[in-house]
Length: 411
Image (cartoon, rainbow, N blue to C red; front, side, top):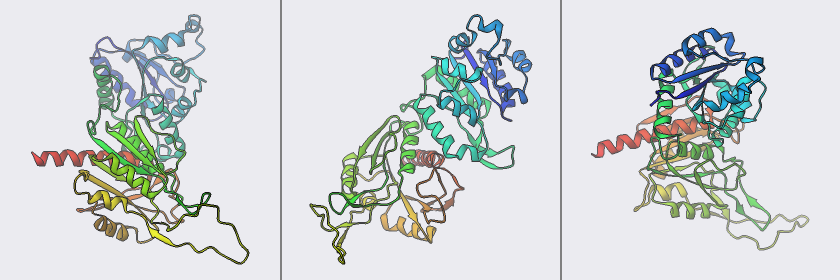
């Protein structure tokens, strides 16, 4: 599918730049016509001459090349290609792309192009997991930039985790798929054809018309899960408590306020293949809601009587007619995290529990990173600290694998 396809390969600075030379060789072997662009940082690792030698076309690096710019060369470069591939894509270049900066040839080409763009991120694990990088990543996805990787592995800096650039063969496969099937969309992926329900955020339980009981949940983990499910091909429904977060691309959003509303909405969505209950639902609500604002009276404190809220996770887990094939709950604990989460999995009847420590000392609640333990009937697995988006992607891929094996056993 790559024969005579014109690919503009932008190489940014980082140790993974050396892999771009192998990438060029593999693309050329498939028949692609490759032109290389190197940032200043990339030239600290590889040379324009090596790129020129492998592509057979002049490598570009200077925005103000008099010979080229006399004919608006950067505009021509950005629009003559069939596809632009950025490999490696550093955190810095991703940030400039997300914010529309154009201060060198690479970023100018990316801003001026009207052609599809695919990037293969590569950076230190901490840089990848940083909230700023994850926000930029989400913006690039909103801009229809296709993301390849990164993958987990050993880093040049000695650390281990997500951040390694995908191998050249994987990038070539993605490029090949692009020309065969078009850009990734929610019609492709390991969850294609499946329906996923995700709950997120807090619930607000009213006391009177202006006051309510809530918690500090940001909804970020649930929204990250919805984004990951959609990108993996699922028809994704997000039932969320009050949140100002942007709806992920391709996700159907249902806004609710109370636990009862969240349960009602979730039941309306059934049947689904996977149910993930990440919302921080209030366990109790005021037994009676005042119809007018409760007024402060000197020396008197209003007495609030509480009643238990419906148990959403248990209700769905034990649903006789429409129980999802895989039910995943979340357990936010402040102490005895693993012990309490294991007890919760048994009590609720769900398949998996994702447990996390939300004690004040953890610094997790409301942030952009998470440190979780996945608990199932076969045991538990503690995951290292990672971004909430990475947690979401890892969890959804495990869910997809689980359902695939489940289907194979059923045959």
